[in-house]
Amino acid sequence: MQTLAKRVEQIAPFQVMAVMERAKHLQAAGEDVIHLEVGEPDFTAPEVVNEAGIAAIREGRTGYTAATGLPELRQAISEFYLERYKVQVAPERIVVTPGASGALLLLSSLMAEVGSEVLMPDPCYPCNRHFLLQVGAQARMLECLSEHNFEIDLDSLASHWQAQTTGLWLASPANPTGSVLAKDYVVKAWDIVQQQGGHMLVDEIYQGLVFEGEDFTALSVSDDIFVVNSFSKYFAMTGWRLGWIVVPEWAIEGATKLAQNLFISAPSIAQYAALRAFQPDVLAECEQRRQTLAERRMTLLKGLEKLGLPIASAPQGAFYVYVDVSSITTDAMQWCLALLEQEFVALTPGADFGMKDAHKYVRFAYTCDCQRIEQALERIARFIQA
Ligand SMILES: Cc1ncc(COP(=O)(O)O)c(C=O)c1O
Image (tube, rainbow, N blue to C red; front, side):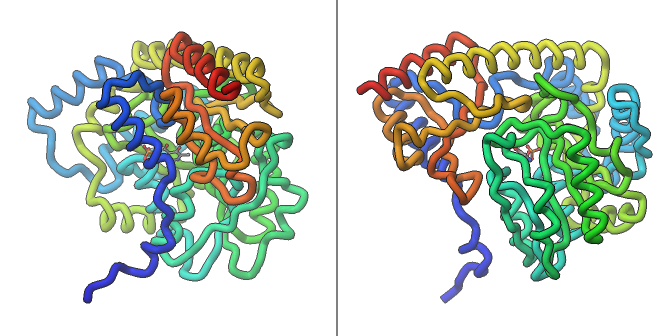
């Protein structure tokens, strides 16, 4: 009898899949489902970016590229860091990957030993801990409180560091909380991690989608911090599967070997398309979309307050609000399913993102327009009162 590798058992399926499947089913049956569960807004890649991808196909630029990415794309990313964030990042330190997912997998292989442990916030992006499991390591999640912006308490961080701990993974803006870290926080965290001799990753996949606080990169704090990014969110290119990782100089050779072996290269068509993304017209369009998201954020936050579900600290970035629903239910997953069944509003249960208190939370993604968000809020109000 053939069996699956044991590590597969340790990987929890996403609870949101049950919600999404049911939502699809209801929609197919003609119901008007409002989708606030998915991690991608209702924007597509900017049209000129699409055209650049089509041109790459027509011109036959469809083969493998260098394992670390097209030199001109690494150059464009480097220039973007300089222009927008005033940080010098040598193109050689940038490795283009199949999405931030590819970057996180690469980083797990690069920095986590078998049996080692990486600290990260609870709640956080669920795939992080699964990527670590793939390489025989694991995540230790540190409880984060809403009243502290869902940030790891840095005063106690060192006390969590054990012999097997090798690093700290953070994200800013974060999924599912929308929290944006302050630069001082990153400086302090890096200080502690350095004292412990560990590595630090900051996942900046929602970079640029900041509504309050400073939009900066952790690369401005140190060249030795690993930074992950992607074209998925700011550039709305989720399906193009393109991201990157910035590594310290001493890690370039190791990261290159892994990129060669894990992926051969990131998708060439997506890379040619992404080259177009850093032009001023596309950046202006992305800024316009950020403003659209800012309006949606306010609509949702005001609406939640009216529903009696106020947010302890308003999320400063990304396109998520992580909401404590414990005043109305003891089981957020069941609540999500019942809401979908009765009012056709799809949300993501907190259990996908964390352990402690996750059953109290749901994540709203403000991925549809204000009118739809208001409609969703009306339906939720009716559901709560029923
Ligand atoms: C925090 C975070 N990191 C990484 C990813 C993976 O993104 P992608 O592989 O599409 O670049 C996501 C996707 O939602 C995310 O929220």
